[in-house]
Image (cartoon, rainbow, N blue to C red; front, side, top):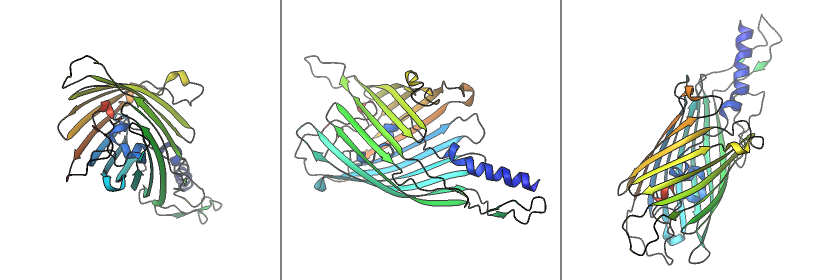
Length: 341
């Protein structure tokens, strides 16, 4: 029985990274912009606080929960954006947890009156935990003297690095980012190396007004079709969707894992249909989304729920920018009214 326990524990530890090593995926990814691309730091009018929380497959035991809390601000005098975010992920019967703290920076390069190019970088420190496992030694086992020595650590710390770039004007945006540039080792045992694969994001979209009449209106309905491609290790996924805004109401529908890419992307390419809804107040925006699972896991798992809160505020008068502000590519074009730089 001791041998069986040890072998089972070793197997769980060695395979933990396969099931848990991949980063979480948010449906409302624009509600947590620093987690999407470090180049988004400072793209709020002045200061922004964002909180997003996801509960995935709540009908299954030990459901996956992910939370990101971020803060960033625009420093006009340096054409720069600074920010930080806290990422926490938890799942599994072994009590797996991952917590990282990241600092990000971006710099706005004005190409002309309409276009801005914004590179960004990020670095942080994270810890993965797998309960208080201690260590065990199988060499002296009376059941199987040949069982190898295995030192098991209940936690593993690591440094992490990321970078990104964002190109945009008042109607169009296109960005790319790479996370886990250094592929940190997060193995819980001393008999294997378990690196976090680099994660690639490519995202973009275009927004347009549904009213182009002669008379000016206080409220104009808008559509914003956009996409997000994600790749990490053996995992690939392309999401397509459209967001609609008629202030203060926001609605959206997305397909996560476009099925036409079956055979090109991996077998998780057909994932979920997502529905988004939000309401905007003067400084606060509240969003909710639900993922209806269409993969082999089926709806019995309970889909996924996300709740987001974004608060933007001005703490002091800022110098007038030397260029006109550029509209922001946000969820339904309302999270950020404008880019300033």
